[in-house]
Every structure is written in structure tokens, then in C-alpha cells.
Length: 138
Image (cartoon, rainbow, N blue to C red; front, side, top):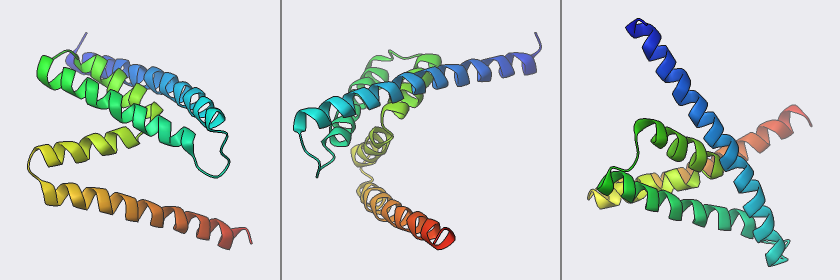
């Protein structure tokens, strides 16, 4: 197989692993969120989403340590676990892990910019999306 064919096969394998991990993560998010929300008996606070975000952050922290300190993840398993499984479970875990890494690396200003910027800009994007939908389909 040529180098180009090998690269294409590696990319396709990685995309497959990410997709499978994302499928599993999304299903787990749906199940855990539903269980947590049901246990809370609350209709006014999103306990299910909160539980998923906390669990995702815990697991990305655990896996990141194992990857960084112990070298326990190959490129393929990193794609499956970090991008696919945890990405499908909650992208909040990636946001929190990246912010933590900035703090850990002494980049406090960048970490605070990332945290404040993502929260503010993403809330603004939700508002813009809703306003756009309202304007188009009024």
C-alpha cells in the first residue's frame, strides 16, 4: 500500500473510532442525564446536565493523567476515548481540561480569558441563534 493509501486508512480508522466513541458517549450522556434528572425530581434546575458535566470532567482528568504521566493511551485509543467517548459524552470536559492545562502551565491570563470568553461568547451565540430563529420564523 502506498504512503497516501496508508495515511487515508489511518485517517479512516481514526474517524471510525471517534464516531464509535461519540455514539457510545452520546448514549451514556442521555442515560446518565435522565437518571440524574429523575432522581432529583426537579423541573427547574438541569441536574442531569450538571451530573454529566461533572462526571465528564472527572473522567477526562483521570484519563489525561494516565495519558500524560503513564503514557497509557495510543493515538487510536486517545481518539476513541478523548475525542469520541468523552466528546460525545460532554464537550464541557474538553473545555475544563484545556482551561486546567492553561492554569497548570502558568498561563493564568489565557485560562481566565478562555473561561470568561467561552461562557460569555457561547451565551451570546445562543441568544443570537434564538434571535435569528425568531426573526426568520416570526
